[in-house]
Structure formats: C-alpha cells, structure tokens
Image (cartoon, rainbow, N blue to C red; front, side, top):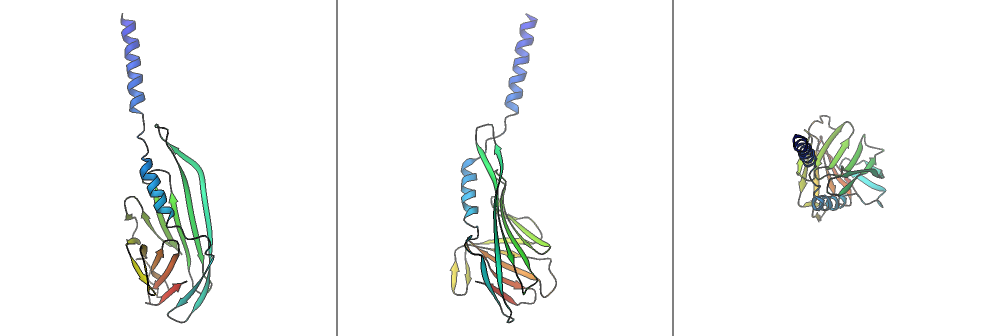
Length: 195
C-alpha cells in the first residue's frame, strides 16, 4: 500500500513540475500586428541615393546601403507557436558632412522584442514599439503627423540627440515611413534636407 501511495505521490509531483514549467504562450496576434507595423516603417529598398541640401549652402549625395537579415533563430512556446527574429538596417553614407547615420529595425521574436534604433557617430537612441517608449537619454518621439516642404506625412519619428554639443553635430533628425531620414537639424540651427 505504501508503495502505491509513493508511486502516486511521485507521479503527482512530476505532473505538477511539468505544469509549473510550462511557458506562457506567445501572443501571436500582437506579434503579427507589431511585425506588420514595424515593417511598414522600413526604408524603401529602391532608395539608394538621396540629395542632401543644407541651409548653409553645402549639398551632398548620400548613399544608402540596405541590409536585411533573418537570423534564422526561432522562439518556440509550449503551445506550438513560433516567431522568427529579423533585422532591417539602412546606413547613410555622407561625403561632405561628418555624419555616419544608421537606422535599425530589430525584431527579437517575442511580443516585447520590437525596437527601432538610430545610431549617429557615437550616439544612439532607441524606441520600443510595444511600450511606445524611448530607452535612452537620446530620445525618439512618435509623431502622428509631420509637415515638411509643403507635404504632410501621416506618421514620423523625431529623434533628439540630447548629448551632442558641437555646432556641426546633429541635434534632431526626422524619419518618415518608407522614406527614411528626410530632415536633419544641427546644434548650430542649420538644417539639412534629404530628398
């Protein structure tokens, strides 16, 4: 009798441990919706050059390099759902301005793993899609509309580099869905438009 009670006790403990170890299911609706939203922000891969014109009379041809990576790593949950990680990067190479700008959209596979990052020289700012928050001293603000050169764009990100000090450094830049970076403001107040 004690032996059968011990077997039942062991089986009960194993069952409890199995149930306790179960991971929560991925919220696939949130993942799919956020993936679509994030991908709608990717810079059009057909844009490989932009003309930069500044308020101080300097112009430049900016070369854009696009890189998309599907990391091949997949997050699985105990419910049979799977979500892959990916990253879309665009690098802006300036010739006449001392800038190196990189925009990165990163999906880590889970509900809270969606992030937009802008790197400028040694500075960076990040925005999390699911919490709609910026996670550094440099900030990214989501704008529901942005007017530029007579056109109103329905959505934009305004990136503020709060740690820059020199007049020739970027204070703000504006990023538009599908178009990428279109407007830059330097600490000196000079502006650079990318078309």
